[in-house]
Length: 434
Figure (cartoon, rainbow, N blue to C red):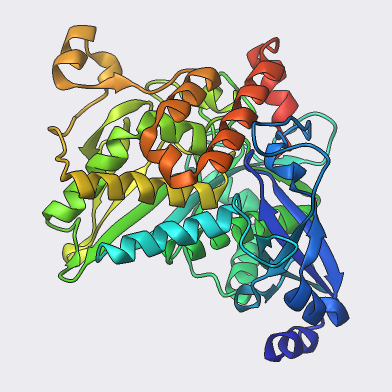
């Protein structure tokens, strides 16, 4: 296999196979390079119990999935295999979950995303997507000590991480990822980067690889990176915004907001309450999802309006994309892209239209003014988000009963286990989980 020869030439001796569970945790199995051909042919064993694992590694059982029984096979996608620049001797490949008979597993999140891409293609639509990545950098200590300080977006911050940033940029380039932007961010010891858009499954793969690389390079510097929603509940948190563009036979359907593009965004807008459970459904996510922090807590859209959950961004030469701002690093990126596509396609099928765009900060308006504009607050608790997902006919149909039930089960169980924690304890409990 050419891919294996290439990895061997790069000094690789071990291949990790990753999958992301419904709590957004990237889990792995690994094989020596000599065993990769067998892994491609036969898969690597993994328990289906992970479908009902929480981010705290507590296992629950849903109506269909969870518990100690059964076995799956992880089959690496060698087209995405890459030597890890910040982990010498290792390579990474995303895995598809298969049954023991090597048939697609009903709750494989990566396969779900691929099915939604295929559904879009049947409607004559293709999508390009990319995640933004915000993380907070601390020292390796039992608590949290910020790795740098200084003003938000400040040059002083950049000076303290310049060497780390250039090595991280080199890592991403070596792994075939196109870095488009890097900067110090607003929150305590926070950084952000973005990579070039990809097809939706590729964008989700990219998200896993980017975060893996950030964490690995940070450890090589004696630092620790977290993509958790917050380390400081009193301040801004870390998001995982999803950018998307919708293309039909005439090009980018968002550039001049043609009907297909508008209907797609209207479908996403309608399903945002349920999408919160997919993209930011852990109780810690709601420490970040606060008004007037640019977190996107309002079910509305606007042109370059950073308080809306759905933000339209005009680019150069007629380019345009939409940003889903309410997502964060607790999301399974495959579920995130797949559910956004499913929501958008429902909008296209029903020929939905967008309401008027919102300007300014909805938090500064009265309840009556928001009601008149049709602006509603997205769920404010993990339980509320789980309720919205459970009630969403669109996402229930797209996910299928097994996967839909498993996600709702995990989110409800996480909410129950975190119910007694105050904000500080909750942030501390999940600081190093993502």
